[in-house]
Length: 84
Image 1 (spheres, rainbow, N blue to C red):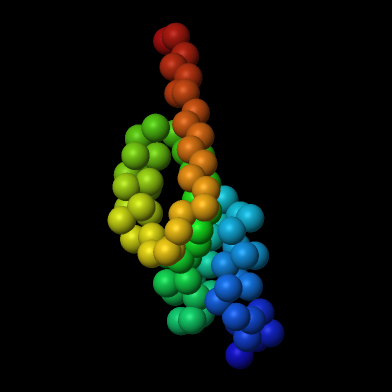
Image 2 (spheres, rainbow, N blue to C red):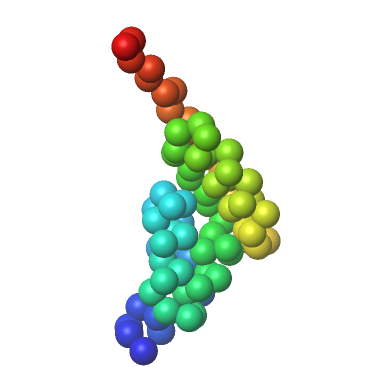
């Protein structure tokens, strides 16, 4: 097992909590131990275009198991439609 995987869940959660949520979710591919760790992150930071945003936030909120949600940050970019 690698050194970072030997850290406690609390410490790993503190580390990954500083990342955007999509990066935190991507950590689940690192190892079996990390597979569901992202669902316990107490800080959620979403920044997507609207269509992807709604779907991703909905799934993430349903799967999140953190005992207390310390932060929920939402950022939605406006789509630009160019004249044709």
